[in-house]
Image (cartoon, rainbow, N blue to C red):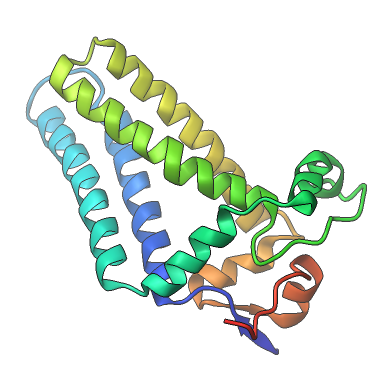
Length: 199
């Protein structure tokens, strides 16, 4: 199979660090509940430690990783053009296979929107409301906002997992986050405005 590089090591480590620690925080947050005792305290401490690891890990990867590729990713994700807007308007039809998919670049508009919301809204919102909940107490408005941010994150992650693992049209993209490479024919079909040889 002829493959092309989609994600380098820095991008993949960053993705899996965020994914792993997000699920670790999700599980510890749900399981610890509101009871006291040693188990609760261990889970609560672990939950906070995972949040600290996420912040420190992202900072370390951005500092020591391939900043050129991360910068290119950020520019591509942050750029919405007319075809991206058309992709979003027609998303229900083409995601269900009822209409052709508008041509996308390296990232389609759905991926751009998901990445932007996750990076600049959901994760900072979770961090900020979580810190305020620790400072103000678990019955504060911050704690309730933290729960809302968790629900929003679960919706986004659920959609991401569906597209990466279950949707037959987009499932081949998952190999890009495992090996870094995707099938060239698949890339040409789903991301025709992306030139993978122009890295």
